[in-house]
Image 1 (cartoon, one colour):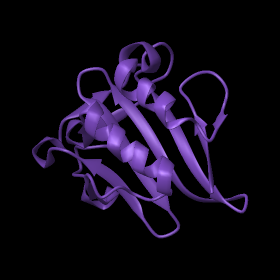
Image 2 (cartoon, rainbow, N blue to C red; image 1 turned 90 degrees about the vertical axis):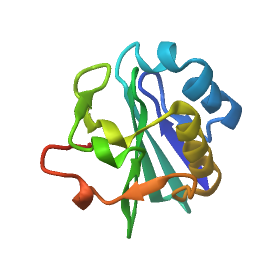
Image 3 (spheres, helix red, strand yellow; image 1 turned 135 degrees about the vertical axis):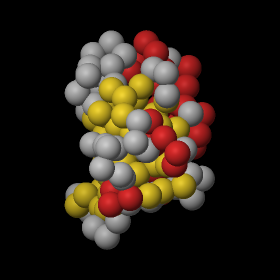
Amino acid sequence: MYTLFYPPHKKTIKNIDISQMKKYVIDEFESYWFCSTSDAEIQCFEDDEMISGLSIGTNIKYGIFIHYTDDTEDKLSLYDETKLNEVVDGADCELWVSTGLFLPKELAWEVIKDFLETGKASDKVRWISPDDIPENGNYF
């Protein structure tokens, strides 16, 4: 298994070091994610075939939104179901996501770390289906 990290800027990183990714998510959150675009993606591969993906969107006030996909699942991180009708943008205004989907960066880090280690959706967070997003809500 290997991963490819498509960062918000710079070149794609194969098998990003977990400690470096933690710095991006926790320690350097504002300087790393908000200098160009506020989203990124991590893809997990086995035998050169993509088996799952993790899309990451950030908002400086609300934290990190995570969208997990594989052949059978399409999941959105859920933090506050009462705020799914409230939509905010990311740093570059191309991201419109329900506020209730954003995780605090420390919790998002745990989800990202689990994905980097296993290629699977973490059990450390609640997930919902895109079908559960109300009409006034949104995700990417």
